[in-house]
Length: 197
Ligand SMILES: [Fe+2]
Ligand SMILES: [Fe+2]
Image 1 (cartoon, protein in one colour):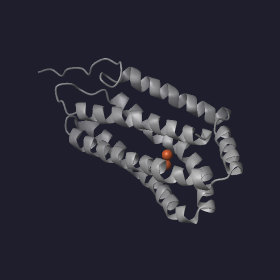
Image 2: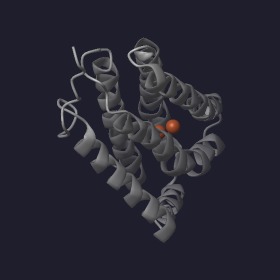
Image 3: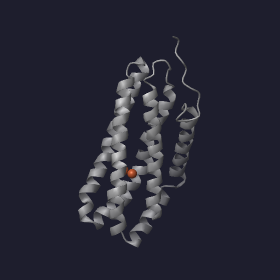
Image 4: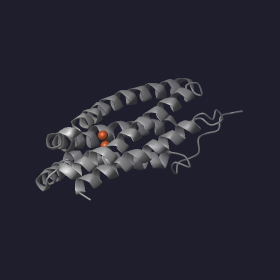
């Protein structure tokens, strides 16, 4: 497999892992006998906001998608759809943040709305990643030349320059924090505090 493709796929796995974890915690937040630790939910939203935004989408939009659209005219509509989904994803994250704030202020009121927003976002993002892996990447493998791949690999490497690399390390630290704060079955953190009966 091309290096750049395996980088994108492994980033999809990281985003997916946090989406699964977030869905599970949003479900647990319904239990009115244990107060959620909102801090971990905020960290997860920050992760799914920043990882795609700062690290993942720029690689796709600027390097891979642009070249695929240039080489394969039949891929242009798909590329436009995927780029529009990157923009739509940002809007959905803002909605998720609002739903989290609302829940945090009135919990357990707002738990249902938060869970619905999480489900909608996770479904949206999984569909997006599937479309990239099952439709876009095969077209890229079919149409891009060896020289295209060299340039894409080089551009992805620049993405690992000291500043981008620092950002990547921040995100890894954030991921570790999520796992250490989240309760079982998601992470290894303390169970959520039981509320007084
Ligand atoms: Fe994408
Ligand atoms: Fe992607």
